[in-house]
Length: 216
Image (cartoon, rainbow, N blue to C red; front, top):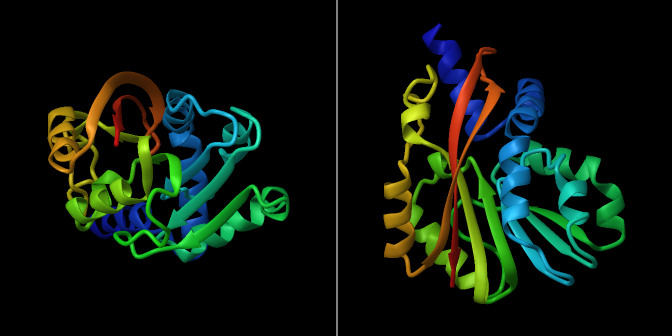
């Protein structure tokens, strides 16, 4: 049982192989509410250039593209499998040059300074190896007055899940806000939500989560 939970935790952080595809589909289904909420909170404008860190299979891209006209989307993944799956399922956006998916090492963002109007990430915070370095990179590639949205499940909820002892770093809202402020961001708003979802171990649970919106 412990080994199964360890394997699940590893797949949640970096999906691989056949099991990784199943886990990614499950993550897309259980995270879609958080993801759509985050995208909506960004108030995307016409011609915005958007970066997402840790997009998974990116089944949410059509929803994002419907938010405003002439959006450009860039996705970064540490999982080669997820980069491949997202590319496969979003060919129409890639072919018309409105979306691109690339790999990165989880810390260094391979884009120029001030390249993006909006940046977001959902449920990746727990796996950041060096939060200060990554936030410094996010700050660098964000345009002046650009918006970054960080969405994550509350520590008090995550603490109860059987797989989080294996490689997850958990955050309260206060922890996340302090981390963002320490790395130069100005907090605009912190939104609290609760939703009912099927857990990764197939039980219905009430999940509390936060979206922290910050400005460069």
